[in-house]
Amino acid sequence: MDKFAIVMEDVVKNFEDVTAVNHVSLHVASGELFGLLGPNGAGKTTTVNMLCGLLKPTSGSVFVGGYDVQKENVKVKELIGVCPQETATYPYLTGIENIELFGNLYTLDRKTLSARRDMLLEKMGLAQDAKRKVEKYSGGMKRRLSIILALIHNPQIIFLDEPTIGMDPQSRRAVWDFMQELKREGKTIFLTTHYMEEAEILCDRVGIIDYGKLIAVDAPKKLISKYGVANLEEVFIKLTGRKIREEV
Image (cartoon, rainbow, N blue to C red; front, side, top):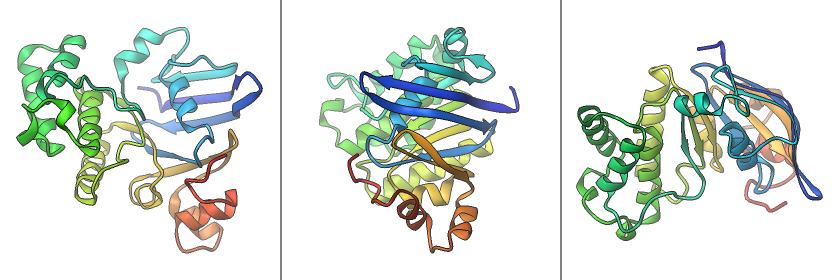
């Protein structure tokens, strides 16, 4: 894989009279755990959707795994796993049935699928509930299942759009531990989150986006030191002038 797993060059995305992403350039190294932070409506999910090929940029270039996302989308999809902000599961199927459906879509052989399924269910704390229908799951359980679906085919580059929202502290910590394990395996992880503590603990670097513009990129500790504050949340408020969940 290239030195940089993700490259954005002067990317713009317009929706009618709104510029959701405004001339963003960003390089994420292979094996890096990168966090994109911003208030609601700042452009985080739009950025993830362009990186995954779900949205076409108005202008600029996007490369994932060395491939042009627009021109070589099939190759990009072979490399990536995506946990979207909106939970994408089939409620009338059980947890196992959801996982096996996605594994079959990725054409995993039965032995590989079975091993990956059991490992991920254990890691995400869903082994005891795997045979229940997903409609009976709590919101946090559905988020954990969505993470499993994103990872079932063992992707090299992983996009997690607010993966731990709605989880209890114990489940969130289990997901953090697993993300760190994936990083040790050399996976590249692109994370969006509203939890500043999550970003501060997990991320090698973070980018702060506001009104579609990338206004800061660095390691959390370096940003905290640069702005002379106690933690990443205070950096965020100092740069944006607002709380993480304020609406644009």
